[in-house]
Image 1 (cartoon, rainbow, N blue to C red):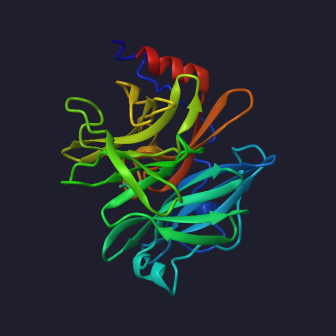
Image 2 (image 1 turned 135 degrees about the vertical axis):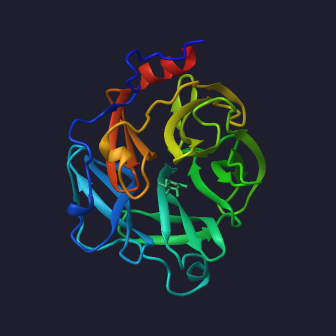
Length: 312
Ligand code: BMA
């Protein structure tokens, strides 16, 4: 068992030297912070759907655009605010958090966390351009968040990962659906591991990525300390034909808070990925929130990463 495949204590993911890529100063409207954004590549353009926390302390979504995936410009107006009427308004009264976008059969879907006095629920919306959204359904009961969709049907059904909180212990679960609205056949997939960096809670982070070794799931895990939790990113490979089966789970994190922009902020010691882009040349760009205060990007060669995971 290799417990430190990156000698020197460095992370498998390489931080971009220009991090953070977006902070409060880059937003063209008043707000408190920006973090936890999900990326897509539309043609040659990179879009980043951002979680922005407003000055009231609740979140909504804005959009940033880039030509290279590193230098982003934020559009002048938010693109999705909490619903003001209908069923969604009941469950979004305290904001929208942590969007995750997935392209399935020609359509972009976004799962996000709807927050209200009743707790956290996962909501599903559809979009063509990331500027206008059609809300489809609330797809979980309260106490569930961190929903990510697989990019294709598996054995004829849609599949998702999520994080029901259970008895206060957050594990990653997998569920299946015929229509993306009603979900079932749920089973627990990855739980916190005693004696590891992810001993307190785990949750899905990046929509699963298909690789030759299996579905790569980059997840977040926490360890509780006397100063609160430390949020790190980890990786697991799931069986391509039956993703309820874990092929391999990496023993060590692939990214840990080390830089000031990850250690200091509204919530310190947090790296929190919400999406990734795999480039034609095999580079993976992972976008993550730093300390609930900024957005950053880190890269790796996808083949190197999966090789490290399989041999860890
Ligand atoms: C998680 C989510 C994230 C947040 C993280 C660290 O539970 O709420 O939105 O970034 O905690 O505070």
